[in-house]
Each structure stands twice: as structure tokens, then as C-alpha cells.
Length: 90
Image (cartoon, rainbow, N blue to C red; front, side):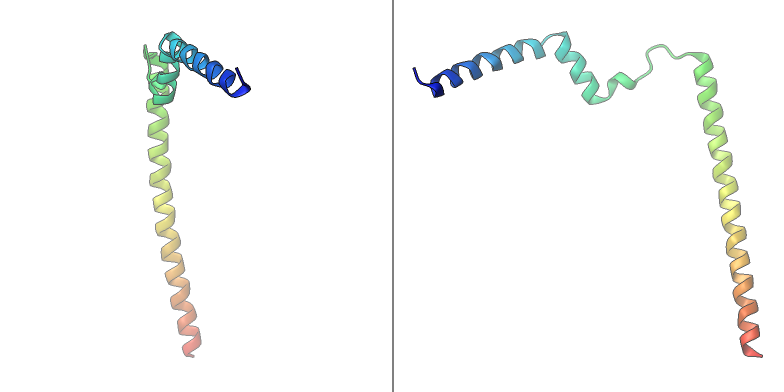
């Protein structure tokens, strides 16, 4: 029996062992981890739900304020461009 035959046999037994281990609870946990299902809330805490709701509301407010700032900046840029154009015409 040469070294190649020993490697084939060892690989065969390692693959069978890995298949047995991965079909058990370890494999199921690994599959959940890969699929992202481990992130799903199991029993949602009301305090965390309130914090999440508040964070979403705060984020919406920040987005609204950012949109207003962008509009103001656009207005100021147009006003400055118009003033520069009138100065160049003189």
C-alpha cells in the first residue's frame, strides 16, 4: 500500500466523519448562521422594540433635516452664481 492509497483512505474516512458531524446539531447551527436566521428575534423585548422605534424615528428626522439643508445649500449656490454673473456683466 503506497502513500497515495493511504491518502485516499484517510480522505474517505474524514469525509464520512465530516458528513456525520455536519448532519447533527453542529451542522444545523452552522446552516442557521450562514443563512442569517440566527439574527431573527426570538422573544422581542418591549424595551428594545421601543428603542428601535425611537432610533428609526430619529433617523427619519435626521434625513428630513438633511434634505432641508441640501435645499438651502442649492438655493445659496444658485444665489451666489447669479450674483457672480451680474458682477461679470458690469
